[in-house]
Image (tube, rainbow, N blue to C red; front, top):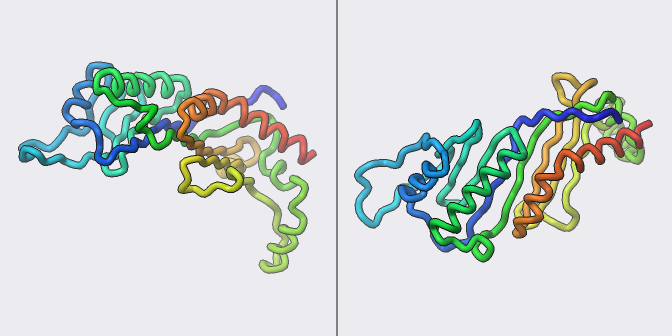
Length: 224
């Protein structure tokens, strides 16, 4: 395989708290975000009665082309961008803000971390041909062909973490398919990696391009 070329559509790194109620005062949190370089894009409602909290969800701030989102009901904070390195770096600054300024013990009070990524990949080989020639699908192809009454062939491959469910704290899935606009030249890859262990998620995110390159290279070798 020639040196692969990656084009990220998006990569999102997030955490979900494990508190009974959302552990941040929004106004203080927004002020802290400004202090580390974020621009607030969703201001809080005015004239909220004392003791009441306005629920905030969606994109709340931007920095360097990345978007920070927050969902108070789900206790989720996430940062999305198109650069793996920048997302990891700035998300780490948000974590430091949460722990240093607001005293949150993220190690004890985070339910899970999660990376969701989607991107295009070029290897110099034909993705649609690779998928069509993968071995081991003969019985599945025969089943589909018999039911549909047409000749069929695999278009994509999707894998998950064995013995795990999408709702579990520990989850992984990856989908590899031809990029539909240009199926002879590009793959489209989407991944989700979730774990209560921060280092697992961050390390996976850092190694994402290398690991996906190895997987695609293996698939292309199998299809020869």
